[in-house]
Amino acid sequence: MHPLSLVYKGINRLGRVDITRVLKLDTRKMKAVDICSEARCHWVDEAELTALLEDSDFKITRQFVEDFRTLGFRGVAASIDGKLVGLLFLMSGSISGRHNSGGTHFNGIGLNLPEAVEYLFKVIVKPDFRGQRVNGSMLMFAVQQLHEKGVDAIVTTTDWTNIPFLSSVERLGFKRCGYASEFVFFGQHFYQLPMRLSVTTKTSDERAVQFVRESSTPSVA
Image 1 (tube, helix red, strand yellow):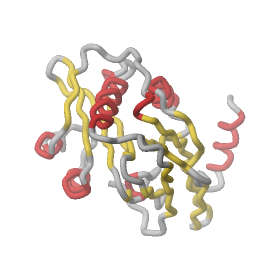
Image 2 (cartoon, rainbow, N blue to C red; image 1 turned 60 degrees about the vertical axis):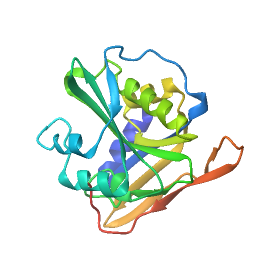
Image 3 (tube, rainbow, N blue to C red; image 1 turned 30 degrees about the vertical axis):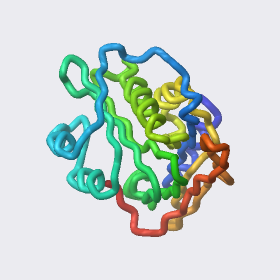
């Protein structure tokens, strides 16, 4: 067993722990990789998302549909032989911690994104289609489309033990750049945040992504 796994298990005996890796991608440096050739990707609209409320694999809630409409999420869907098999969501601007949280026990960690930067915060692939690089197909579609719309960088976070997701995004060119973690001991919340996360725009301007400690009542969309 990896030494970090032992530490992780030990800490969880004392309290609640949400450790996430932070990664970023310069959209101009995305790598060309093998993807699921059968997958066909498109942008999701509110009506299509609403139709998925009864699909237990995607776990879409009415609150999420409302946030999609009011907060301006971008969604990508992947279909194989006409069947929807995957979803991916991004957002920009100021992001609430409830969209970057390890569950109901956590406040979550918010983000403030500069212009031309998007946050990838949810990727779902139906169980029967996992391991077929469907998420890679959706990511490549999103990155190519967003780069054409002027997005210079994409930031994402994921549980540090989520090896399949880490492998898939790193194949595309995402780089690890620290941790964003929340620890809950005896009702008190403690955070480990990246010291500084900079992105460079096509005009060579350097801008910072800010991670924000949330203090509101824990909630998850």
